[in-house]
Length: 466
Ligand code: NAD
Image (tube, rainbow, N blue to C red):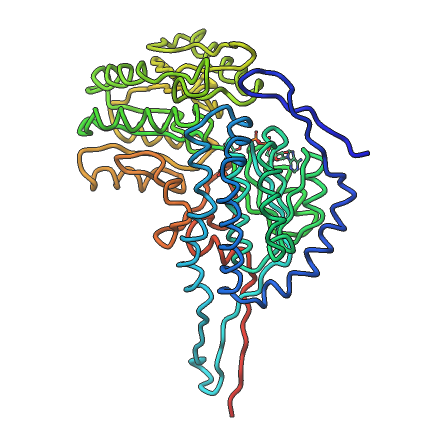
């Protein structure tokens, strides 16, 4: 009999779901089946693969309500769950445009040997492993999987064991399309299955915490496979004296409280020019007070629960540490248990500095700590004083002023006069590629052409013509 894991409901705290765990020993048989099917999948060609993916998309659309309902149970929130449901169709559409260019084929004549033609080819990694986190359970399990399938790989996906309810209704749709079932397999489990997966595949995509990412990198190194790591963040925002304060406050609030702050690119630190700090804080507090938590029912407000209990304790610890060291809560400040779920109020907090965990470690809650600066060089220094380098935001009166700052911030994507645009553009990456800096990740861009090509090895065919 297979082992099961009781799963906690984030709204009630009750363990009301039993996850059947994949036996790590079964992975090699699953891998063997997929590997056998990979050559046919790759030889189907791009248009053939896109046809199959579009057929799957229709099955997912037919099962929309069941997947969505499970996702809402997994996460306790509605709006973000509805957005997650858009991931599959939107990424197929966006990748289609890019993939046609990527697979168009290139050839050239060597400059030094005019009779030698070089043709470029792409050879997919046969089997990719995808390990994903709990904060966006469905979309983060698909984010790397779809480009890998488009590229011609097969994939084994291990979503987080914390939020697994959505998997069965999704797998039901995979079973309806034999060509997809032949190349895509979801497994379930936690660390053990993740570790075994790394030893089974030809490349691994990992989205999760920096601490686990380090372990994944080491294991992938031992297995001699590439690891694409998308890890945590501590995104800073800089607001200069010339910025539109009302717009900045509205956008920073949205960038901090979306998904109750449980977003890798959540705004976690705000540096505002001293001259406008009071006016900015007043606006932010005013707006933050209007955001309601979705309690007692899922439809009562916009802010869902903190999905894991341990994360709620981290948020509480960061707030307590900051207050103990002299910070002042300007609104919110409570992370409380109600009827078994954990809820964090949108919180504006001033008087913070980098001696506090709240300014250095990932908080993953709807918390907006604000520090002031007198010279923009100091703001940039503070923004860069972090082990993370995922993304950032800059608000200034002119694009030139904002860009001059953005160029000096050590992160992979900077939203100018907005927040989270890097995420909004996911899949639309023919416009941009980006890397995670520092401890926020390693290797390849998840956006842009590279989101497809990183799942392939580049090949050269060198033809000597007579
Ligand atoms: P986590 O690191 O605890 O777990 C992530 C996944 O790794 C889970 O599926 C887990 O079962 C698996 N895992 C655990 N130990 C493993 C091991 N030794 N080997 C292989 N797999 C293992 O992360 P989490 O708490 O689920 O997710 C939250 C984190 O994810 C946050 O830090 C957040 O910033 C980050 N995140 C990053 C991005 C991004 O794109 N950069 C996106 C979403 C979330």
